[in-house]
Image 1 (cartoon, helix red, strand yellow):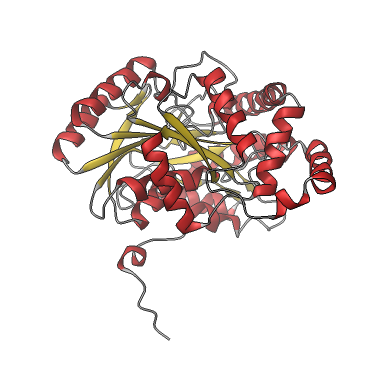
Image 2 (tube, helix red, strand yellow; image 1 turned 135 degrees about the vertical axis):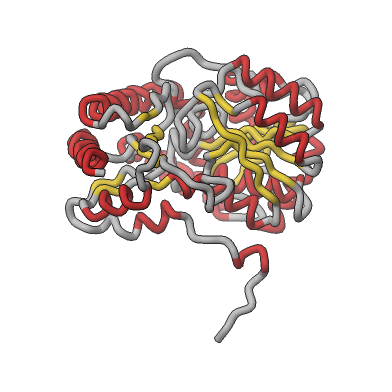
Length: 394
């Protein structure tokens, strides 16, 4: 039977990352393609204890419908932590718990954008966000990245040329996929441009807790004086990705619209996992737990960078992240990314081609993303050596 699917979805393709996952069951495969937190970061024992307590003492609360805005104790805890750690949350702001940061991104676009409106984004950018925007009929306009963040001159050019721009989507801290962090100077200029051209900034910060070197940079939201920034975060990288607990902090009027949009999608986020998350924060030291994750990722990032420095041809460039879980490699001019990725796959080393993260998938690309949170130390050393050998062959 031929299904006449909607025009919005006809052009959408499956996530390249999820497709790669299907090849990872092969014995000996080394994946640098994941975006997952390391399983050693999951506080399994503590969560098991909390879940037992919940089913012993509060089973009805955990198993019954909840309110769309989220489990009240968790909302209060997240608000307090955002204020304490990131300076986020003004008197005019409110917060909603969402089903992972991905839903926060999608709901914000759904509320803000009409079909045909423009979403300006960093290029490259997070594939999940790009597909969410595409699925809602938004037009994507990509702006290239410099070492210190989005190219401000090109951003203003994009805003001038696209008067229907409604949102600027940005991952300013440990960007996915590039791994870079936007400097304070660039952030201030971007805020000024947002005011000048009257657009909303959607600040996605799923990796901000994972800084393992360097100094923190103030969030856009902490510098926002007009309610112009929507801040999206998640517990996926510090407690559990599978819990799907995210949050959006924004002006109360905007959050009230996001609440309605969420009611249409899934009514509310899983109550049991909201309760587990809240009680973990209440009972245990979340900040100490995060410090241990940082140590692990610092080691893995340094190991990968060392392997790249020692093995890769000097013509291959790569970023040196101060946190997060990704870095970005670029092949020299004239090299074939498709051939490189295919040869790597043939040797059971999997990377994500940069085209997956492009606002325009047809745009030429010579870059690929590497993840260091998931592979073992041995896999990092072996896998980078294989990639370097392929780069030299090409």
